[in-house]
Length: 124
Image (tube, rainbow, N blue to C red):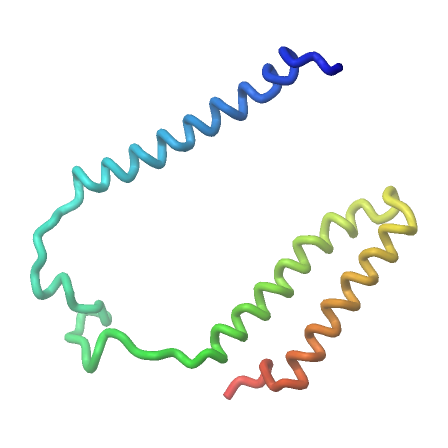
């Protein structure tokens, strides 16, 4: 049976960092409530357009293709996050890791092919 006292000693730093993190976030939120100005004026409610008076509404609808394009970018950006550490330790981790990464890249390739065939990558 592992030493329970030693196990708790290892997590003491994590507990302190968690409590400190919650305290900092709570302090920032409380400081914002106390120090922020509350006076609502008409110029404050206007959207900022380089110092000029805004023309039209401040809100407008954005087509979903922009969101789809952004999500596809994030997916392939996250792929790079997994690919760089794998490439740095490629020689040390063995052949099985090579085949696993090959499967990962093939799955992402099928996703890219699907998005391409559906026209998600065309900027219209």
